[in-house]
Image (tube, rainbow, N blue to C red):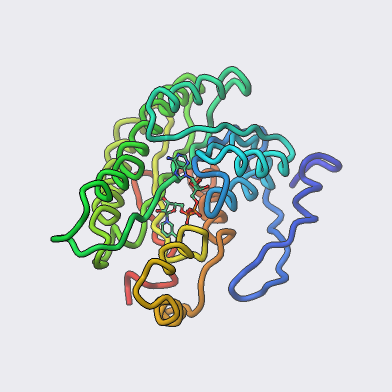
Length: 279
Ligand code: NAD
């Protein structure tokens, strides 16, 4: 439970949205007190939702985003957070961001390696090379840079928990998003290998595989489809559990994997999909 009058007082005042009950109170969990969480893509969507949830559970948050203003807005709304304008496709910038985090907070205990893009939807044989390279430079190379420099900081910190963002597109076939499927399957692979490389040093590495969540990325993806209205209607019943999950629903799972409640879980990719992959 949070100490009276501390950042925990924020927890009780925040109401969470849910697919089943839009007025549900935030759960009274306070598992991450004093831990430092480094979140990429923290300015919007799943990263923003997770920044808020981890802060509610007591974490200090480093909000990393290519969009400086978005990162500033999110960080300014949290009890103890800093914003960093970083393009995670730039390895020098990622290395500098972890160095700055160590200078400012003295440790890196949680990494949500989350920034990613979907790219343009194109049939594989017509797939534009810039589209392919653009998606992979963020979803594959950027994820690798965050792991490489983040693990260095985490080893200095004495261990921690890393959560990479994969997708149901890594677990099932989806058409016209070749680079996305390819890169997210790679996220699953590097999650497994990093988990066993660093298990003895106290670093757990897992991934999440969300189904579609209505974030700015998904809004843009729908708008770029041939028939956005039909796409939207079809997606309402895409998963066995009807409707859409919210960013808060994904954030709750990330908070669990970040916490000691998940201390025996490493190397796995956890679907958050309303039953989509087992249907
Ligand atoms: P979003 O577009 O809503 O937010 C992504 C954030 O990342 C933005 O703030 C953006 O500015 C930032 N960003 C983009 N490029 C960056 C870069 N080069 N460096 C640093 N920051 C950068 O996206 P989202 O829907 O929240 O998706 C987040 C992650 O979740 C992605 O990896 C995505 O593939 C994955 N995902 C999303 C869904 C979904 O339905 N939204 C489903 C499965 C997986």
